[in-house]
Length: 148
Image (tube, rainbow, N blue to C red; front, side, top):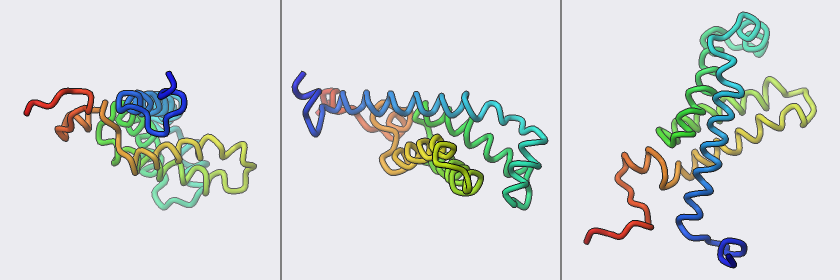
């Protein structure tokens, strides 16, 4: 219990559990709380929101934003192509925070900043040991005995 509460470097199993919880919760929240409602993009989202930000092909960028949030969130939750998904999520959330909500108070930007920070974390750190990325890369969990 002491190691769990006060250790600066918890066991690999505890770290992997933490990464898994954040990845799954944030990914599914982004996908189903934000992305699913943007697919297919409605006319108001395309013209008023995306077009209003000055994007040259608003329909294309509306689809890109919706897919980044929905598919990116699903991929993030699964830990599959995590860094690629996180890059698209980070770009979309950066656009939401710094362009769409540019003149808004911080309380309106906060959620975009939270998703941006989470995406940047997974972009830098990767998905962790308990992910599809780890399976495809051949990484072994430190909790498994080696087969030497």
